[in-house]
Image (tube, rainbow, N blue to C red; front, side, top):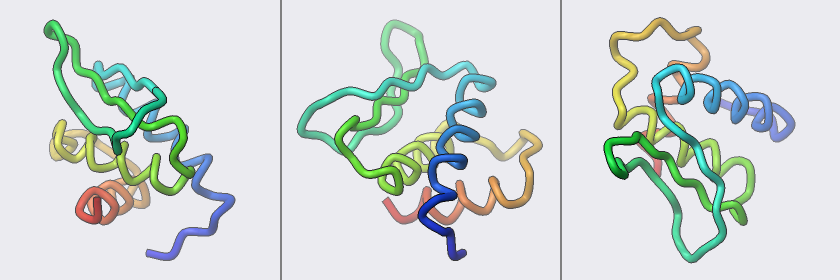
Length: 90
């Protein structure tokens, strides 16, 4: 799937909304890490490197949502395709 650079910001917002609906907290932090999904004190947490470019943030969030499990949730086809494709590329 070919995504234009200016679309990544909207996709990032859509993925953040989806994570919130799934009960996960998305945090953008500085550090020497890529990011990903974890559970901290029974809270679902997705941590993304604040210094990454928007495309890398989308890829990290997509991979985390894929790991969290979006199989049984209705998603717009384009968003599902992004999660499946980008989630596999991290």
